[in-house]
Image 1: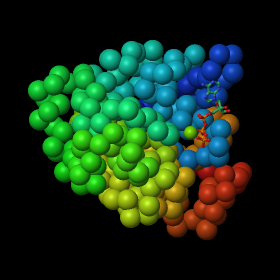
Image 2 (image 1 turned 90 degrees about the horizontal axis):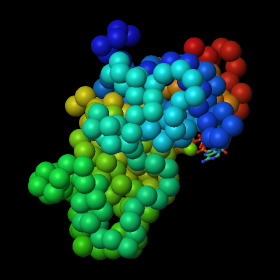
Image 3 (image 1 turned 45 degrees about the vertical axis):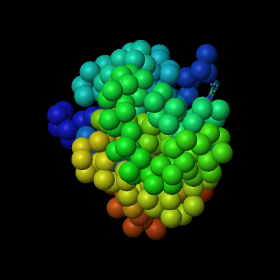
Image 4 (image 1 turned 120 degrees about the horizontal axis):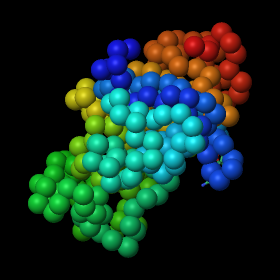
Length: 247
Ligand SMILES: Nc1ncnc2c1ncn2[C@@H]1O[C@H](COP(=O)(O)OP(=O)(O)OP(=O)(O)O)[C@@H](O)[C@H]1O
Ligand SMILES: [Mg+2]
């Protein structure tokens, strides 16, 4: 992969919480405009990778590069300015506020004028959310809330979208829609780094897959190759990945 094609690079990154290191000398690259799936058992450090990229954790060692620039320790504001958007695991809306107000807050760094111009574009992607624009966010179904969260991130027209387990609580049809949307974004040049337990469906829309175990890289392969791999079930189970499937 040429330097100019690289969107994200982790170079020997060590990061963790307090004195407890979770990512252990982690190195990998993600190609611009690709969808990369981050796999691994519970506690492997998948969310920690996303949090480190989004400036919520500062690397203790190594470098986190975005478009070739070291962003380790950059502030949230700087990272948003660089075009990173993050949809974290779980529920992340202001439940007491309306759908519209949640979108307005998502665009706070853009200014009101731009935000109001972009809200209709986002709502066009999620008709169910659009119908509930004046509802309190907490009354939306789980799937609708997740769509709203994704929509809120897309307001920023991110260059890099970090998305952590988007399919949780979504019906298969909505998952299909969300995955198709990610494919469309990638085709327009957005880089997507996604954690997803719905591995088989996610591999079908992903370009590459990275797997972690105890904060270490154990696999980095094209998604299509992995889908065709008879040992793939081991990834679903989060068990040890044998040497035949490692990069
Ligand atoms: N805020 C925190 N403070 C201390 N330890 C944490 C914190 N967040 C996560 N950890 C620990 O870091 C390790 C990796 O967590 P992380 O959330 O990155 O895992 P994950 O791969 O996303 O797992 P899951 O599939 O369950 O979401 C876990 O052992 C977890 O307990
Ligand atoms: Mg996680």
